[in-house]
Amino acid sequence: MISQIMSIPSGFSLFGLDIKIYGITSALSYFFGVLITCLLAKKRGFKSDNILTLALYVIPLAIIGARIYYVLFSLDSYTNFVDVFKIWEGGLAFYGGLIGGGIGVVLYCLIHKKNFAALADLIGVAMIFAQGFGRWGNFFNQEAFGYEVTNPKMQWFPFAVYIENLGEWHLATFFYESMWNFATFAILLTLLLKVKFKRNGMVAAYYLIIYGIGRSWIEGLRTDSLYLGSMRVSQVLSIIFIAIGLFIIIYNTIMTRKKDKDTTERIIKIIKSDL
Image (cartoon, rainbow, N blue to C red; front, side):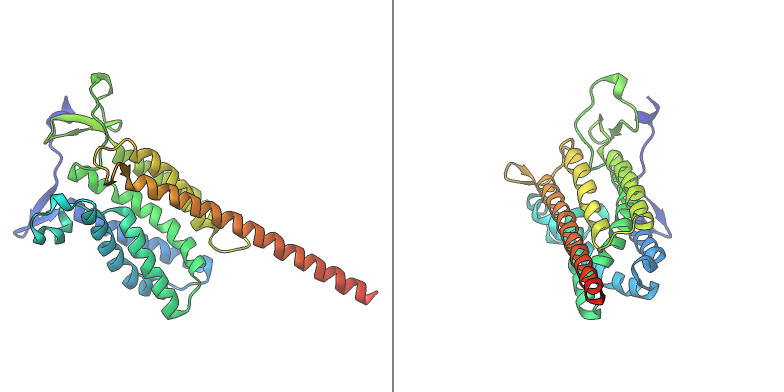
């Protein structure tokens, strides 16, 4: 078949340098993340300069976290210590990046005295788009695919992808997640721009829930998951993040109703005192 014959390039040479497309897509995903956050900054009372400063905290820690996470759960693959640092060859785990980036956001907010929840709303919207774009690096690296597809009628992209070094068709799980992320981006952007939540952090909560649902499902289709014992680590973390998101929504809803009730009672007291 045509898709089977065509070779998927993993990189190219430029001025004598070997350029990996995975590295380009990763760099662009961070760029788009920062750009979108800058464009939306005013929605939560921030300036573009604030976001650029934030990026200096988040991006390095996100890359370090993503790499450490991946290496820790793939120690058998790294017999040469130098290989640990070759991130351009692949091996960046998103949840590790989320943890590392999250630490960067906390540090930024503590040092610069910014509202973490308000910032998290912006980052959630921008990050899910960056994730959707970044997944295409897996396509060029021929990774993050799912179970083998043996039915010839189902051997077509984007349902499946041909893995050259295996000579087999596999579920294109990277594509599924990319599309899920772009759809989530549309939902979160709508929530940020159109819905006036009374408390910050709600958009971030929906990010955790919607992404967590998609990732836990898609992770179950993959053949290269990172495991802790018999458990897929990303599925466990997805469930935890869904629970955190639900907790934030429930907590914010309760606090909002309590505040509204207190305000109503205060108004009634003022009216009675005037009478």
